[in-house]
Amino acid sequence: MTKTIEITSDSQVEKINRLASEAPYEVWLSTDTVMLDARSLLGLFALVGKKARVVVADNVNPKAFGKLVDKMA
Image 1 (tube, rainbow, N blue to C red):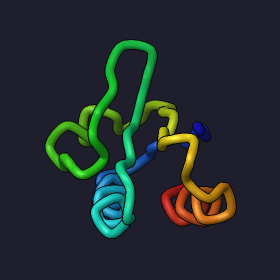
Image 2 (tube, rainbow, N blue to C red):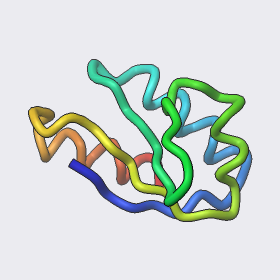
Image 3 (spheres, helix red, strand yellow):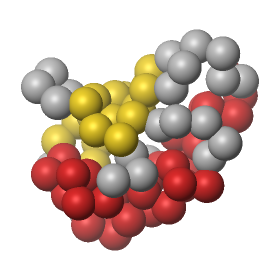
Image 4 (spheres, rainbow, N blue to C red):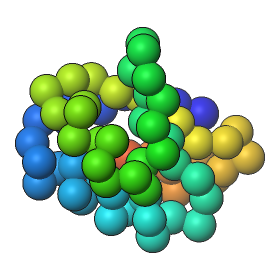
C-alpha cells in the first residue's frame, strides 16, 4: 500500500521519523531511485524537497495507514 507525500523541511523529516518509529509495522519511503526505512533519520534528510511514496505492507489497516500519512504530510 502506498501514498505520496512531499517532504519540505527538516522538521517534517523528524516528524515522519517519530511517527514511523511509533507505528506497529514497518514504514518505508520510496523515490524512483531509493527506498529508505522511515525509522532511519539520517537517510530521510536526503528526501527534503522531494516527493516520496510512503510504503507499508498490504495487510496494514487502510484507515490507520491513511491517518499516519495525513500526520506525516
